[in-house]
Length: 113
Length: 114
Image (cartoon, rainbow over all chains, first blue to last red; front, side):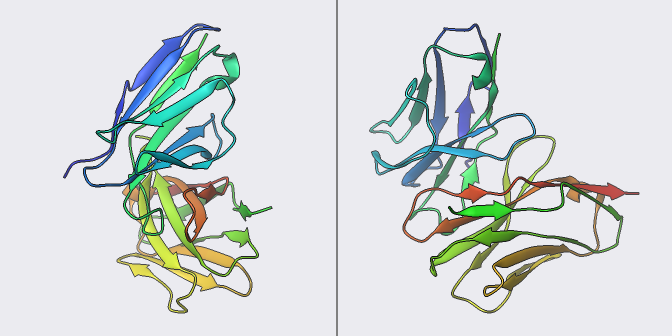
């Protein structure tokens, strides 16, 4: 069965650089979510999109932006990277909101040096 | 503020034994959903079990079951006949109906001893 695909799997960037993370949800899932998980931390909600419109927003820095495209894939853009942005970034998708559970991708490990 | 608390940072269980992971949450809403997710070393989050707040019956998925106490805002996970493959971080989470985000607890690391 198709899963949530995230790319790249690993990414190393220098401070002040820009990073773009991509997420391809499960076909026919209408909602995409982005989470940030710092080392030894629980996942923190960043932002979600329902049918290509932003549906909810969490503690996402102003340096970050995200969008969902017509083919339902989503991208998380992070600019002016800081050392503290080093984390695992998860994308997840679901159908009809999150009431029935998410399917998560394998995450992108971002390291800022 | 809506919070999820997992008071056990780490638990150990002998293979084939039973272990219970604790979770409490705080919300003033009545319509919500609760989840347990497993995160193995491969790091992908996997849904273990789900509970609807309006259902009194505790959810069960094979060796996994929950003890849902709505009045106490408690949602514990019981793993029976523990297997080595159950070793992972376990996160409790909830979402309010009609919203598009989960609130996660801080996780419990489960070790399974052979």
